[in-house]
Image 1: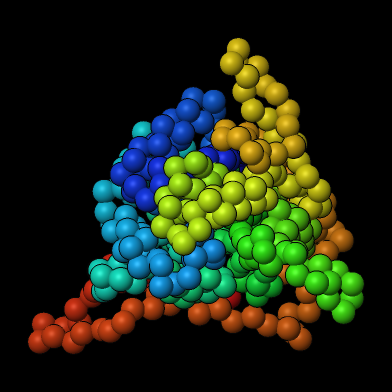
Image 2 (image 1 turned 90 degrees about the vertical axis):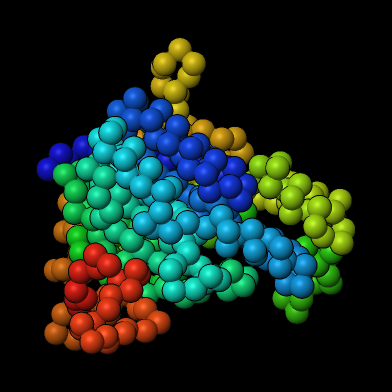
Length: 369
């Protein structure tokens, strides 16, 4: 196993609600990062085809058309978009982690917030569905299951992923630690609104503080850093970009387009950055037009690819202090059981035996940690 991994986190916007065009953009970014020597290329939460931020700022009665578009542009894991990504990974010898809005054969309206880790041979190593959609996400996605709580054991280390708010779930995080995770990918949306501008001008509360919008940048960093410190692993925070086309589409369908457009344009942006096994920020770099490297802390306001080099031997020293799932754990006192069964709506017994649904194909048996 190589102890050095070069990662490339794509801080980019999807082609809003277009699975085909966003897949093409993803492939182009993978090819670019591969030419730069990246072993792993990372994309944000539900990069294909979009993150449904409209549900946070528009009433559900205004969002039926956008939900229908989201369903039509969400992708099947056995479909052409994922097949194209798998072929690209194999052709370029590069691993991929990408967020998708996943549709399934069992329903014309059920979606999952999913993440795929694809190996450099084109095989899907981890297919994870977000355990619980967060807040307004419940209007778009259904709860997932434990099947994807797995770490990909690759020649460049043990790589895991949790999606957005799952990084607040200590049991989900521990399930990855207990598999020896060395590189943790946390994927995030471009913005996370919780209050419209009118709400932020409300009177101060009993503690004297005014209501404020959710500081997702700080919250994301705290959660990712805590996981890195506890797991003694590297962290990749992968956020997206909300571009002007997406803002125009979301705002134009509202009752107050100008106010919503202004709000979206001025909402705090998510950041893409790296963390070391102590939870401290790890500088990344971009490439200038002349091919030289420029060190930077993160990408936030502009699209780009953030590169970083990680030496997995740096994960070892901290295990002397707190090996949370090993020598520092009381396994005789505390235990975690994880059900990694893929859940399906029904299993059908035909005369010829058990009929396997599309969603169950190629799924290995469940196991416990």
